[in-house]
Length: 217
Image (cartoon, rainbow, N blue to C red; front, side, top):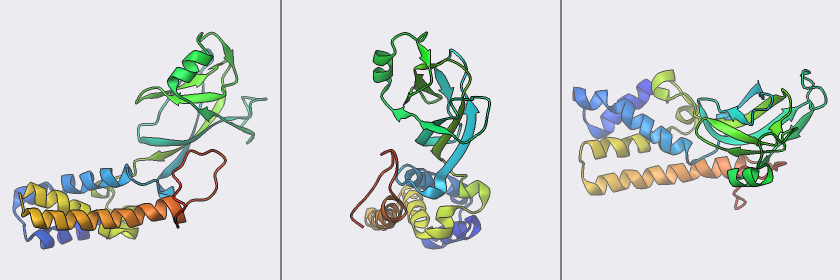
């Protein structure tokens, strides 16, 4: 289901083509997408970026579309100017652990740990003693179907996006509580099936325990 088809379906289900309602359809869809993106961890949402640490600086910037971290690795610690794929994966810790273990930012070395410090940065421990290539493997917010026209969820699980959008649409319309509850139930059922796929059928063993894993399937 592309965005045009989704818009048409929402208008047909609600029997509402009033201009103000139609202009708010993107908001209904985006809100449903946000719930989906923050509930499931699909491989289709993963991205890789490479960057560099700054010598004697213990923070690392986070990409603007960052949702959650999958792994961070220092690449080729014996030759930081090389792009040879020799990885050392950093361990995820709390900020207080890094502050306690490395109380002085001037204590430098090859980074071994990371923590989510803010919405914009990670903190590394110890502070990098030189410039290192970094690979960040992370879950990203995918482009909204309202902008891109299509999306992975819209193509593969259109019902979860439709029901979620209809919940928001009927709340906007101040619809009958029973009908809103019915759509909410359908949305939760579809979301549960998507989450089962994401957390069970699309999951394999990982070197680090940083991903959700549902072993019931």
